[in-house]
Length: 507
Ligand SMILES: *[C@@H]1O[C@H](CO)[C@@H](O)[C@H](O)[C@H]1NC(C)=O
Image (tube, helix red, strand yellow):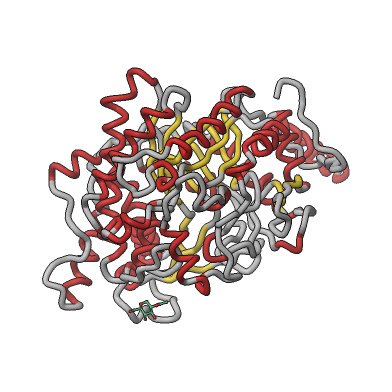
């Protein structure tokens, strides 16, 4: 009797497993990879390109980069258009997301002078992709501001909204006949908090008390201007979509207490709500609890006014609803506590304003990047949370990926584990009715990982940075990803033959 029951249970378990394995990615669901200009292009001063803030930081302050490296050559994608597209064809990608270097197109940052050689690089890349039916998705801004604009304040200067609109007009006019998926900004939090409020991204301003908030307001207005520009002057003719990509980590309360749940809400508002709420919520504007909290903390520290600049009524309405889709970059997550945190925050900053602690259980798989662990089901949690919070928008997961150390080489089993888990979570999200249209792995190839230089690798393809030709070699994960793209299912038992990478028919 017992044996029968066990067998029966085992049978049910196996059939549940195999049904799960049969779940398919819909045919119109776009699966791809992502990169960013400064991280791969190189050719930092070729053919008229101007200096950007990463050129400036890495040349003038090289010790802030772990291995004192820079993106002068990086993966040299500027000279490798055909090989880059060949890798996309090997994988069988539906979509490839990349960003434009503002200072390659407008060397001074301003739109009075367009560098046609720079535009031509993007034309060649796009045209090569389109030959093989690979859909381009372009981010206008992925962190490489022209240095001249930084010297004028960058995102702390409200005029950035006009400068960005001018740049966007040049781009839409030149490339919009062939590109239908536009992202204004990649990860405002990393631009504003890390670059202006802290020290982990260029321009490393460390203006802890005010930098994040000044930048957030101006960046939102820049986004809205570019969105309306596309909507009013280009959309009818070109027929594309324009959205924004926000980094959304998963935050869950450490305990079930009311304090921890409130702390989690505030943490979410400070991390991504400050950018998402003004655009995607019905009411618009900055998240309420955060507004109240920063005002209180500002008064406590003797500031005559709140450090979070207000949005006027007109601006609140202007920014609200300015996205055709919500781009989500998702990597990891944390548990949030209202009380347990070390050390105490000693300087006035976004962190001391919200004053909560974050934790990660040791059993979560750790990557080569200290900030990146595998939190189970975190993409599902994030997408369903955002769906409910923001009235069911269209989503793309525009980045998701895993870091290995350079020594790992091509045998990247942890990356495979991570992608399979993430993609199961994506299928769960589709089953739950999330209007998710695509998924992009970060990254197509190894690249310059900001302050970590070349010490953390995210590529499906390994790049040999010691070889002037920057050869690209598929990792084991590239073969697994290719099989998922080919079959449109996740086979957890698939063991690739990694001897030869080929291009399948039709690619
Ligand atoms: C950033 O600013 C804070 C507060 O002023 C200071 O304690 C810290 O040392 C600064 N960090 C760097 C890397 O300059």
